[in-house]
Structures are given as structure tokens and as C-alpha cells.
Amino acid sequence: MKKRFVLSGYYGFKNFGDEAILSVLVNKLQQNKDSVTIISSNPEYTKSLYKHIRAIKTFDFNNIIPAIYKSDILISGGGSLLQDVTSLKSLIYYLLIIFIALFFRKKVIIFAQGIGPINSLLGQFLTKILLKNCTYVSVRDKKSQELMQQWGINSDLLCDPIFSVNVPDNKKNKTVAIQLRNCKGMSNDFLDRLADSVSRNFSDFNIEIYSFQDSIDLDICKTFEKNLNMLNPEIKTTVYSGMSNSEIIESLSKSQYLISMRFHAIIIGLLAGVKTLGINYDIKVEKLAKEFNLPLIDLKNDFGNNFELLKSQDLSIIKDEISHINFDWTGFENTVI
Image (cartoon, rainbow, N blue to C red; front, side, top):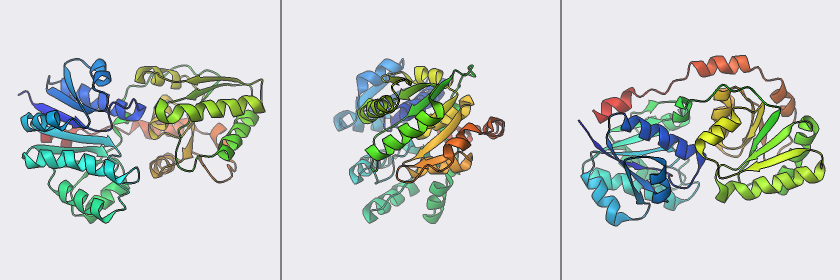
């Protein structure tokens, strides 16, 4: 039987990871020809990506409320929506969408989210109360599941949905892909140290610098390129921006090395068999690096021998670990029946 879904998440911002998760989710729902409405910051952009979907602007509650009322199921996620590190307002917004669905007695699915950190007592209280009333909760990391256990909420621990993306096994070019974003703690000192390490280790490689979300990434990517060119005028660099998800995946999969800040870029690197070094700007990146024993550099500390570890990385071990990771749709499918 055809069902009506409303999808709530960090959609429409042209952020690679969140848009890739959305594509996985929409493709799954459209297999059954279900009705899909997406709450998006940029409805026209979102509608351009998919056929036969509706899109509503993020704060257009005159249309959001009727859409949820007419729906069967609200899906919140994936990504890291339920946290207040970005802002308490962001957390309250996503909780409000969940509250509206629960008020209308709709099924609510928390879809493969990384939950927390939630530092405010108000945020903790509201999140706990609302999640206890959701139909199905799935999380993407052990720390989130431990938090759910502390709150007495049953949850399934799943891998990130991006692990289900089909990544081509392309021949590797003599290329180092570097993915950067702006964040708290980012400094010119870090960019200089990174440029120095890249120049010393990969002076004869093509350096491809990727902006995944231009409003956050692009300026830092351009600054890094400038620093690298000043340090080594002979090194070949290119900054990529405004790429579609498929273009990003295709291009990254051809790289021999990847140095990345963003969580989902690292996952694509792992799936593509690219030797990968993480940049630790967020706990989720640190956890992913530990899970796959990846070298990890810090924004403030010395890089140590991490570039040597990158170059000597054993891809066969990672490939074996990746082969055992499959996104489990069982709980989701049982809920939407």
C-alpha cells in the first residue's frame, strides 16, 4: 500500500554528506512508489534532484504542518541533527518537527543519526521525552546508542547510510585529494603546517582540493591552495567546487590519497580503496578513524608520523573490513509496513 512520507533533515544546503544520505533514503522509498515530501532550505534545488517529490521550505510551517498531518510517517535524519554544539536553535527546530508529527499521532523514524553532544539541560530533557515516543530509533555510532540506553530508549546501531552508496573501483591517478572545511579551531598555522607536509610528501602529485559545501568550505580551500602555491610554486593544484554528488564520488575514487576533514568524504575514500588520512575537527571523524585504524591529524597538534602512516597504509585490511559492512534496513522496513 502506498504511503506518505515527510523527510526532515539538513537538506537543501548542498552539503555532500546530507544530500547523499537523502538520495539513499529517497531511492529506498521510491522503490515502492511512496509519496515523498522533503523539508528543504532550497526546495527548488531539492526538486531538481528527484522526480515525483514535493519539497517545502524549512520554516514554511503553513505547509509543513498540513504535510505532516496528511502523512503516515515522518523520517528525521540521518546525520547529526539532534545536537546543540552547532546551536540550540537547530536542535529545537528538528525536535519541533518531531513534536508536530507525534502530536498528530504519526509514526516517527529516527534514521541512522549521530545523537549528541547535547549540553543544555533543556535540550537533553526535550530530546529524551520526544525520542521515547518515536516508533523506531536507529543510530550510527556506539556513543549515540549508549546515550539512548542511559535514557531507556531502545535503538538499533547501524552503519552510516553512505556505506550503501555504490562507489566505482576506478584506476588510481597520481593524485592527492584534500577536502577542507571551515570550523572552530581552524587557523592559518594549521593550513601552513598542512601545506608544508603536503609539499614535502607529495610535491610530484596533482593536488585536488575539494569544497563539499561552498558556503563553508570554499574560502578555506582557496586559502590552502594559495598557501601551498606560495610554498611550492611548482606544485600542481586545482580547487573543485559546485560538483554534484556523483561527480564528487567519481573524482575522489580516482585519487591515490585522500586527506579529509568531512566524515562522509572519508567514508567515500574507504569505499573507493583510497589511502586516507583524517583531520580531527569533530568527534565523529575521530571515532571513524579509530574504527578503521586510520591516521589522524589534529588542528592544533604536531602531525607526528601520520603522513608516513598514510603512505604505508595497508588497503587490503580496510577492504576486508568494509566488505562486512552493510546497511541494515530490517527495522526501518518493519516500521513502514
